[in-house]
Image (cartoon, rainbow, N blue to C red; front, top):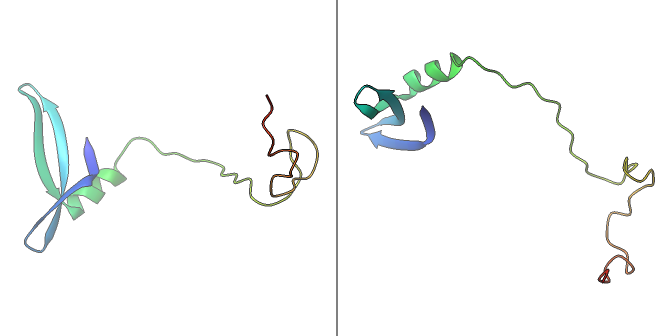
Length: 80
């Protein structure tokens, strides 16, 4: 397991934390930046996504109406 947030400095070198589960349990080591990115590039998975950010006042798919951008006075009252 590689930890991107688990970092420390050894002189001028940045080291990243790496944990490996072995026969004796979890062993923690520190690896250099080059080793970290080499291992990150060799991971078996990739994630491809389509990103949709509903920003702006376009058509609202759920209601079929256009958005107002802000709450109207009627929408600010409690429902119960």
